[in-house]
Every structure is written in structure tokens, then in C-alpha cells.
Image 1 (cartoon, rainbow, N blue to C red):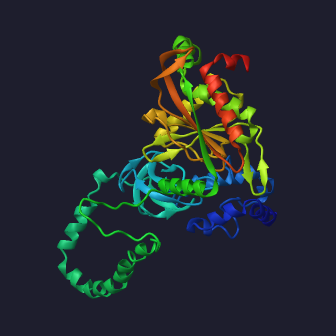
Image 2: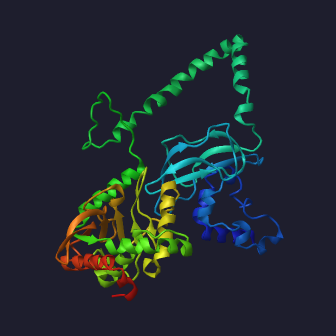
Image 3: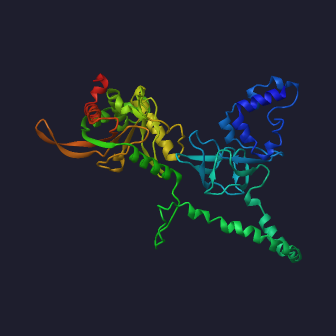
Length: 444
């Protein structure tokens, strides 16, 4: 019966068990799966809850494993997302000898999309680090050893004792000197050869420039590499064209000013301009479905839902979290969603799922003072709307020259799929709704 359950486990959880076998302390039990299934006649009554209680195979990667004594635990790299296979160990947040609590972050893994924390599995003291900063790691890689019984570094006196022992018995050092002299030739060659592969990583088309005064060279972060590759791929793939229009923000700003206090009291969030543009974009996408579509090989995929990506600038680079099903949300829901995603982006707490997908992107360069720009399409989408700063400019209204708060809008679109007619109609729809917000209520 145990063999039948074992074969069933291997069939259902083959990848997970394969990962578990990579650890020494689990390998000792893999022959009979005694680490997962207790022996005895009751083994036939076991269900999935007994050998994987409340955990998916992905969650197991974020778990750590204890030694036979149960005193030491391994902090491992957690599952980083289905589309992320590896990451770079960016930095350690703790040092060996530091006291940590359960689930406290001890290191950060930088991926192509987000920064992920490696947490301590149990409360204890960091005994040592297994990986080093700059290493490429995969889910399940051991990063650190945490001991529950070790004392914090402040109470350690071992370094001074070791120094005293090394100074007091000179005779022992002389006896071991032949062995010490024999070891360096074996250890030194790999250390000297380790830095040699690094220059080979540079491609022939990108030669390293000679060093100059007042210059410094630093490795490019993985997120910046990812951004660079995606932007270049977008430029090489799409036939990008940008059309412009300008919007009179007078009525929308007045609406916001008149009802901002009541809006906060009822919904607990401020009424911003972004929710209005998201609602306007949703209406424009529903009127011009081709703008919400995408080319896939020789086919066109029409999407009957609207997931709006909102570009957010952070200290580490540009991230684009997604507001799901924006076509079913009201102004308050959109504002809450934007605030939540922006806060997570600033704190580096966005997950892979919160940035995956998206059918249309809105980028607001106006928060940085941009007057006009040509945004780049975020693949695999087909268009992106660029908002800009609001500036008082003279405009003609009913034959009179007046100073009005004006904003330039830019729509970059894939001309392979979207014709100029549809692009202009889409942008005009946004202009009409923003300049006369009553259209939102009447749906006209």
C-alpha cells in the first residue's frame, strides 16, 4: 500500500519531490518516502492534506528545511512567479550573528520584474550565508542557515578566543605548517581563475570603454536590463505612430473641486484626475475595440474586457501594475486600486501577478512636469495613452481669448493593426468626456 501511495505521489508531485531530493537531509528518506508518509497500517488512510498540509508545490519552495536535530533551518529562495526562473541576490539585510524573527526578511532577490524577499523560516540567529551577493539563484536555492540555539553576535567571544589560541601554541602551527603550505597551490588557482570569466560576458559589439577620471562602472540592475530589452523589442516589433490632441481641463477640475470633500467622506479616498482618464479610456476602448486588440501571428485577438496598466516610476525603474476589469469599476474603485498599487510599487511589494497582463496602458508624465512626449507601447498591447502637465494657455472660447488649463494628450499605437481614423476617434472620445464630464453620467 505504501508503494502505491508513493507512486501516486511521484505522479502528482514529481517536480516538487525532485526539488526535495536535492536536499541532503531529504535524500536520506527519499527511498521509502518516510519523510512524507509515516510507516504503519494507517498509511492507506492518508490524504493529500497529510503529506502537503495546506501548501501548494510552489509554497514548498518558500519553506525551509530543518536539520536532523531540529536546531538549524535553511532559508531558501521562494517561488518567484511562473514566468520568472531565476534572480540575482541583490543584497543582505542582515549579517551573520544577527538575531531574526520568523518571516523576517534577511535578503532581497532582484528579478526582471520585482524584488522578492528571502525570509527567515524560524526565529533564531543567522549562523552563516551560503550564497553571496551578486549570485544568480533559483527557487529553492539555500541562502542562509538560521540556528535557534546560537547566541547573537554581541555575546560571541569566539573570535578573541581563537586569536589567543593561535598566538599561544606556536609549536602546533609549526607541526601543521607542511600541510598549510601544501594547501595554497590547490586553493589559489580557482580563486585566480574566478574573476577571468567576467570580462567574457561583454559582447563583442559592446566593448568596454577605458576608465577615465571621475567615472565609475556599476552592474546594470536586472530590472533596468528588462526595461531596456522590452523597450527595444517594442521599437523593433511595432509600427509605432503617435497622434496628439489637447484637452481643456476646466470642467473636470471644477467638478473635482466641488465634490472632493464629499467624495472623501463617502469613499475614504481622494478624487484624482487619473480615475477620470481611466474611465474615459475604458469608454474609448469600448467605442473602438481595435485599440484594445492585439496581433498574434496571423490572427487578431479581440479582448472583451479592459485591464488598464498604469505606469509608475520608482527609484529602481518603471513598473506597470494592472487595474483588472476597469470596465466594471466606478471612480472610487479605480482611485482605491491606483493608490494601493502605487503604494506597493513605491515599497517594492508588487507581485508578478499584479503586473502581468494588461490590455491598454496610461502613462502620466505630467507628474514630473512633462509638456509633451511620444510614449512607447508596452507589449503585448497595441496602444498607450500619454498624459502631460496642465498649463494655463490662451485659447479661443466663443470668440474670446481666455486663459484655460490645458493638457496635451498623446496616443501611440501600432499602425499595423490600428488605422489613423480609429486612433483619432479614440483620442477624441477621451477629449469629449474630459471636457464635459456630464457625458459619463449620460453615457453619450
